[in-house]
Every structure is written in C-alpha cells, then in structure tokens.
Image 1 (cartoon, rainbow, N blue to C red):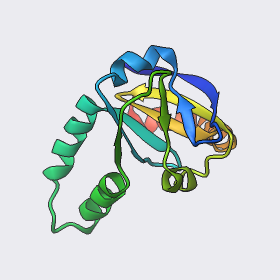
Image 2: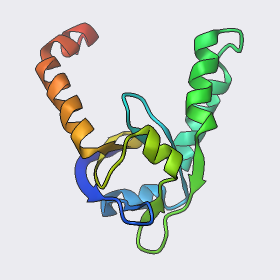
Image 3: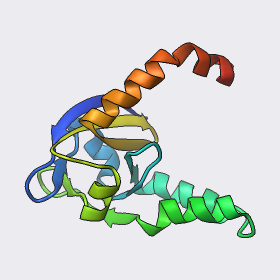
Image 4: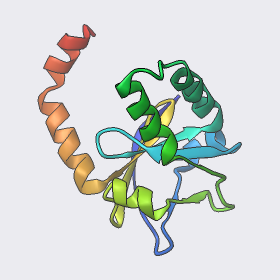
Length: 140
C-alpha cells in the first residue's frame, strides 16, 4: 500500500526523485500517465497491468469508456527509476499537470500522484472543507 505526502522539486532536466519508501514498489518499473483532478498517476507495473485489464473489459461502444481509455493509455509512458531513484517526467505530462518547480508526491493505495504544490494545496482545502459530506455520500 502506497500512502503519505512528500514535497519534492523538479530538477532542470524534468526529473523528480521518488521518495525512498516507494522505490521498492517501483523497482520492476513504473508507468506515468495523466491522472484525474489535474495530477499525474504513477503506477507500479503490476498495478498498471491490473488497470489495463479493467479498462480492456469496458465496452468499446460507450463513449465515456473510450474517453477514459484514451485519457489513461494515450499519454502513458513506461519507465525505470535511475540509480538515484529518479524518473524523468515528459514535457507533455508536466504541461498537463501544470507542474512547475515545487511538487507534492502522494501515495494513494495502489498508485502515486504528482501534484503541483499550489494545485495540491487548493485541492486539499476544497476536499477538507467537504470531508463530512464526502464521507456521508460514500457511507464511510
């Protein structure tokens, strides 16, 4: 399980260091893709394969199924961490997530999310103010 919140910086070459506690989960490779809510998703290879299997069962005849498959698959890239535990984030993905210099990496169960620090703060503020309503709607 991937959990936690960490602040990092993007270097001049578009690389980000992955927090040490997550590196073992990504040691066999990872996939970075467009995420939801304005962030990027990083999946360990095994978790990515599970997602691919779910998406491949969605009905091709449904417009939203096609759109979701395109969102997740068309921008996805395979990577390996370098010796320092870093990964290059391609320019088109940095642009999609509006990544500047300061970033937040969050662990969310089966994936990591990469957020621009400012966008993460805005998202947290919004969801924090709606936490009770969210929990009630989900019957948690």
